[in-house]
Length: 285
Image 1 (tube, helix red, strand yellow):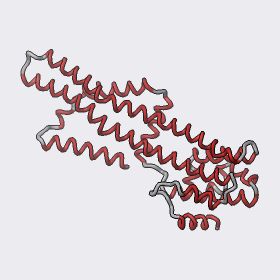
Image 2 (cartoon, rainbow, N blue to C red):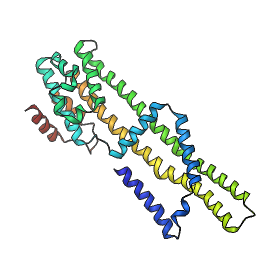
Image 3 (tube, helix red, strand yellow):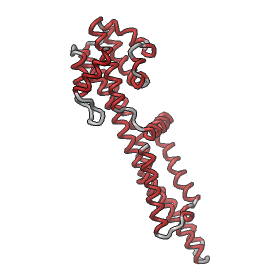
Image 4 (cartoon, rainbow, N blue to C red):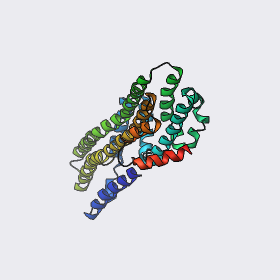
């Protein structure tokens, strides 16, 4: 939502200031300039990355418009689900977790916490860490390393669409100059024409430069920055999950494992120690 609000403010400020100064918005509707700049930018994006990255780019843009789902309530659901899992494993042994790990979609624990169970990456990360531990294929000390390796791979994958959008943003002023130069070429061809015609061609050329700079600094660069923040929130959520699981795997008590995970959270999503204790007591009931 903030992405939309910010973009609207940019447009209202630019167009409002232009109109207050006596400009007419219709002058800026130079469709040839739009085609040159936006078409060139789109073509360069297609050239620079494989299809999967473009699909991830669309998904991340949609995610920015919706806003990050990793809020305080999401962390509360995660802590409660992990606490129930940890307590079950501590009371009845790690083997008792196998039904929940084997079929997460039908787990009586996961299905109670929808924001956690609907996050397929979080469920895959959790089950991928606990399954080899239950099977005895890895030592508890190795769980943290395994999870961090997987999260690092996710982090690199997340940054690829951001790199594509950032490079496109950096190129937009250049495409604006290309459109402006082509406009000047047209102007020189009409140099012996009426003054009004020459002025129209010059204005069209300048619109190309204006459009390239505006799209770059007003829309694409801020959107790429928003995608970085969204990605950091997602990776932070997974690292919190990994910290809790790796601590529990090495023998830390469930409450303490979650307390260790809580301490690394940023302030806007971090529950207090009292809030954590209260929510875990509620989960245990």
